[in-house]
Length: 132
Image: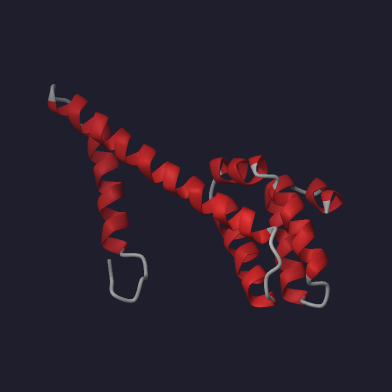
């Protein structure tokens, strides 16, 4: 990975290429082996992504300074808006309750309140506002 800690776009491209390759192969046993290895890799990535969501939701329940709480909510919203599975992970951890708690702890932080409202919408649509 890059020294600055940013995501290496080449790695994301390689993962995309690998999954496309695994789906396009026709020759056995190559197709089975590449498919098995690709599924294993994707399961590892899924587990790590779920662990990141868990850390974000669990740490959101703790008292945090305004900038930290904002970053947590912002990250959860960005993760949640990408796909259904990530929204399911957040909801399974009772993410909406953690968001409501953080919003109550930071009532003067307008951007955090706005981000929390958008996250509730991402998770539950209009009924997310009611749940807050």
